[in-house]
Each structure stands twice: as structure tokens, then as C-alpha cells.
Image (cartoon, rainbow over all chains, first blue to last red; front, top):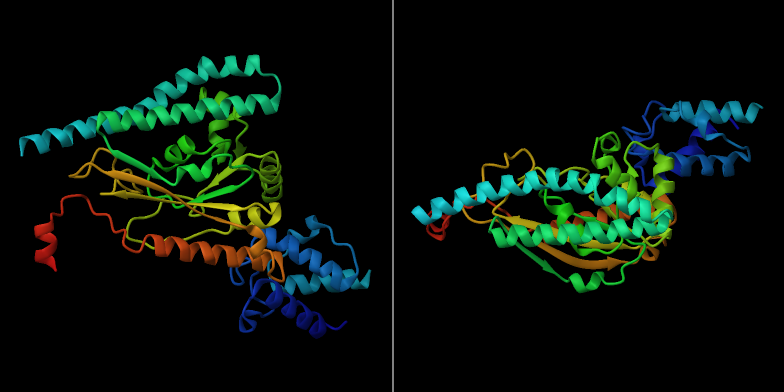
Length: 81
Length: 274
């Protein structure tokens, strides 16, 4: 998956699961402040990313994630493993 | 005029007295009855039940005292809906310091999330430990797990989604935590609306500045929401957001005509202003 493809899939998931408006979703957008996610939402997002990538994600690894771009970096690293 | 003045001083004295009683009687109970209750009930569940019953009675007597003293009027409506209430999240608006007392005097098996500082309090730590309350400094996941467990055990969890008392004159601002608990634990919601008119014991208000008229607290036990209705949305986070929006609308509508003043307004003055 290219970075663009991951972004598209993630953007889709954010809109579907959290009703985040599409125009707010950029690589720089902060998950908690800009997109109004909370720490429990993050767990739901991790589950969704696991479905999308077919890889296991440890919640601790996800703690450092702040922006949409961080999530993409994370997914790319996972897919490379 | 003299009678009004005396009434105001009397209520000011009463307000101070009843606030002090929480500390004094609360501490006395924490040092006498509550350790005793712990001693005679080694079983955790049984201990919690006994604490719940005793605390409910204490808060009932406290409300009765406030009314008999004349410090405030208290009216509860729809309380019969609370009989046999089990495993439900009790969601209320939060205009005053008395709210938690009103709710705890009326609901069975009350459970709350309490400031962690009380676990270090010399006296109240016996109360919060014995009652098995949930600390507010737990990590989000641990807090959720504790809420889930207590709801599954049949306790009713009291939550003020505003997180703190309402700032007078400002619209309510609800946080999403309670909706996360509700959607994850699949617990129903019991709505409660509280008003206090003229306003007393509100946020940023000094307790000794009592209103010109005797304040009247009204607690209305409202609808019970079936969480399954919200869980039909395509994702859990979405269900939580819809639940918050629904309850936001509910309180907004309930409080539409509730604009408490300081009690000095008379019909004559209201007419003159209009």
C-alpha cells in the first residue's frame, strides 16, 4: 500500500466511524484536538486498523501517536514488518 | 421587612451549618460506624451493599434536615421509577453542590466516580474504600473496566456529564466519557434533571450569599434510555456521539424556561423590565 492509499483508507475509516468531516482530515490534523477523538475512540481505531492491515497492533505502541500522519507512519512500519 | 431579613440570616446560618455537617458528621461516621461496618462485613459485595444503604439513609435525613430547618425547599418527582433500579448509568445535569446528595438520597445501590484525593483524606478514606467507589485518577481503560464491573454487579453509576457544576448563564457542555461507558458496558441511561430557583450553591458563587427568597431544589426523575437503540449505529464511537447529542438536546429542552435569578426579582420589577 502506498502512503496515499493508506491515507485514503484511514480518512474513510475516520469519516465512517467518527463522522469526522472529510475536509478536516489532513496529515497534520491532531487526532484528539482537531478531530475530537478520545482515548477510548483510539482503541476502536486500533481495532479498525488491525482489520485493515491484518496485523496485530499493541495499544502501547499507539500511545505516541498524535496526528493522522503519525498513524500512517505507524501503519507503513507495520506493513513493512 | 424584618421577617424577610431574619429569614435570610436564618438561611445563611442553616447553609453554613449543613455544609459543616457534611464534614463533621461525615468524619464522625467515617471513624465510628464505617470501620465497624467493615469489620462485620468481610465480604466485599455485602460490605458495599451495607454502605450503600447507610449512605442513602444519611442523605435522606440530611435532605429532611435542610427542609425542616427551612434552609431550602426540596422536591423530588418521579422517584417511584427508581425502585429496583439495577445496573444503570444515572445521568444528571449539575447546577448545585446539593445535586449528588439529592440523587444519593433517592437511588438504590448508588456508585460514583470520586476524586482520588479522598483516598488520602484522614477520615473520608474509610468511607470511599468501604463503599467501593471508583477513583477518578485511573487510566481510561482501567476506569472503564471498573465501571463495567460495577454496572454488571447491579450498581447504578451516577455521572455528571458536565464534569463540574454548570456555570450560570452558560449552555451545558457535556463530555463524552459517560457515553463511552454506556456504549461499552451496554448499560441503559436513567435521566435526571435538577433545577434550583433562585440559584444557590452554584459554581463560582459564595455559599454565604444566600438568595433573597428561599431556594427550591427540584429533582425530576425523567426518561430511561434503552442503550440498544443507540447501539444500532454503524460503530461504537458513533453511537457514543449520538448519545451525547441526544442528551444535550434533552437537557437543553428541559432547562429552556429555567433561568434562575438571585431571588430579588419581584413580579412588579419583571413587568417593569418587560
